[in-house]
Length: 165
View 1: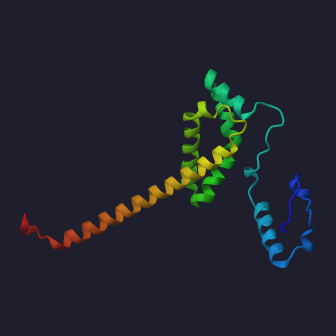
View 2 (view 1 turned 180 degrees about the vertical axis):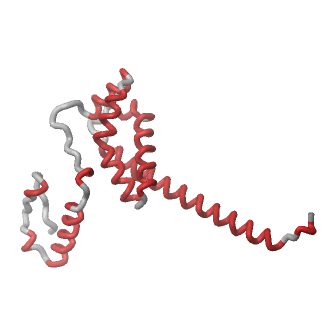
View 3 (view 1 turned 90 degrees about the vertical axis):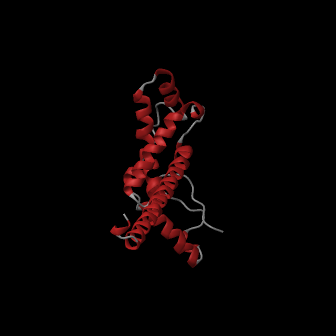
């Protein structure tokens, strides 16, 4: 049975089963995941405000009064999550940045239907991954089309002569 983590500070993780008592392979896999988690940059872990408006309140404030500060607060709260989700999906910094922008544009467009949610984190993560995948498909499609055009131009230039005109 894999170990279960209890809630608490990241530096004081408590295990229901001590890692030393786990079977070798399970212990190694668990340790690799834990090390990968610790290597993430600090900008990925932004503490949620203990007091202050919720996501729903910020979104409602932005919808009703068109206050850019409310939307900016949402962007500041989730920019790291959205960017990292895009970066993990694409592996490319520029595509991740573009996916992040598209995700927040989609949030602005669909704000009315999302205003009743307590937290936007899950929706933003899924949307960022989907936008990233769309950008990867678009890049692949454009690359194939360029290659097809290049092949077409190379074969046509060798087959025709200037005398045909």
